[in-house]
Each structure stands twice: as structure tokens, then as C-alpha cells.
Length: 218
Image (cartoon, helix red, strand yellow):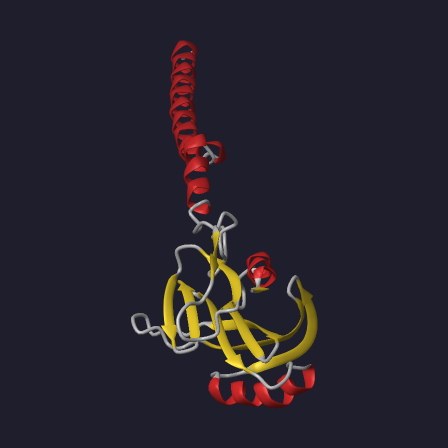
């Protein structure tokens, strides 16, 4: 009887050991499939990083910026109009002649030069009370006019700055909000209006200074 009881006890111990071993093996396999270390492996981290870095690149210049390496060439009118002045304009821009007005354009920027006879020199008052109302009726959404006297190399000049909408692009149908600088030069019965325009968010301070400073009487 004692021998049979001992055999039975040994058998139960062996069964328990086998059962525990199988149970431990299953638990290890399951924990490996859900381990935090596995979910944060280098491959997974790189994949997440690449998704976050797929944002669109930032534009280097806002629309309308004239390049820093832009070349300027001298323009002197010829023909039947007043020809007693010169001014530098950006090289390569398209030119259009409209009577006593010459226009140079490139993409979103414009240089407009108009020569006319004048009985007297323009003043802050005359531009404010005569030119501003005219432009208000001609320029779409005309706004923020400011008239002042400034000095350029040609001497004293009346400057009018304002904003307005461009004409609708015939291809895209888009309208651009433009900023304008209008310089009124005068000498001996002749007035030349130099108007520089481009998008309000463009940084064209230096190019416009080059053009307006280059104006000279001949």
C-alpha cells in the first residue's frame, strides 16, 4: 500500500510540472506579441517620422518679389512726346506704349511712366484734392491714400501711396491686391508721373528705390 501511494504522488507531481511548463510557455509567447518595446521599434519610429515630415515646403519668396540680382537699364522716351528725362527700368520686362504713357510689366509688377504738360509744380494739396479723387473713381477698391513730399536724386517730389485691386487675370480669373507708389516729378512746365505697383505682400522696397532714384531730367 505504501509503495502504491508513493507512485501515485510521484505521478501527480510530474503532471503538475508538465502543466506548469506548458502554461509558462504560452504566457511568454503572448507577452512577446504585445510588448511595448516591439511597437516602438526603429522601423515604426521612422515610419511615423516620415509621415510628420511630409508637410509642403515653404516658399522662399512671397508672390511679386523682384529678384535681388535684377538688372536695370536706362529708358529714354523717343518720338512725339516729351523726351527730356531718363529713368532706369528692370531689364527684360515687357513694354507697352499707350500715347504719352509707357508701361513695363513682368508677372505681377508694373512700372508706368506718364509725361504731360503742367502749368505748375504738383503739391501735396493738389495731389490730394485732384489726383486722389480721380484714382478713387478709376482704381477698383481704392484705399489708404497717403500724400507726402520726399526727396530723390532729381530733387523734391510729391509721393502718393495707395492700394487697389488689379484687373482680373484673363486666364486664372484671379485678382491681386496691389500697393502703389506714384511719384510726381516736375520741371519747367513738364510733369512726369512714375507709378510703381506690385502685390501688397511683396518686398520691393529696394527695387522701387532704385527706379525712383534713377529718374533724371535731360
